[in-house]
Length: 273
Image (cartoon, rainbow, N blue to C red):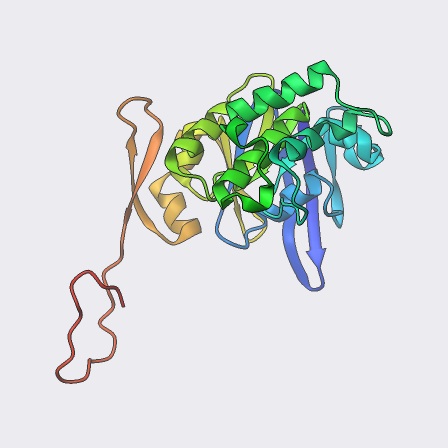
């Protein structure tokens, strides 16, 4: 469904993505993980056409993405990005309905099927009760769920998400990630939480300094050695007691001694330096 072929992005003297080759099969959920600045979001921007790569090719099915019209690619790729938002106070219902825009012509209004799709997406993302609210009155988590509903009603075969669990409480994180397991969806998702990535992804691709350093099933990729090498963090990997998915338990490094404190000072219990 999606294939990145030697994707490269250069800005000035910096190479943000280095010859990235990665495929996402139909119905598969692939997670992109890596430290800050490793090129994850940059690679995603090339997939939803917010950024033109310096080199390489993005393939959607058998077609090169750059050869599609914007309307065609919007029918094939739906994105939930970190920059998603609106400065105009549309209602929640109006924002969700915007997801149908690639399928409509001119001033064509939503038909019965489109309205039903919007209602169902709002119900699944737990925002139906907010339908008449202006999006500027919502909390960050509520707005994130509205934008996720908009992406769902787009009915694109490929869903691209950049940190979709930002601002969400635990219940809504789990609910959103459960939606990604729909066999009719192909998903490329950036996640910072490695335990969430292990729970939801069929495969995980690890980026470091713009280059792909590992890809495969979570149990094969998320090893203590890789986490320490790429993220600089000591971790113990244990199986989840119910699912068997790898779960990482992080070890905080000992506090460095630092300079001596002035005489008579002390640290209050529970505070951090």
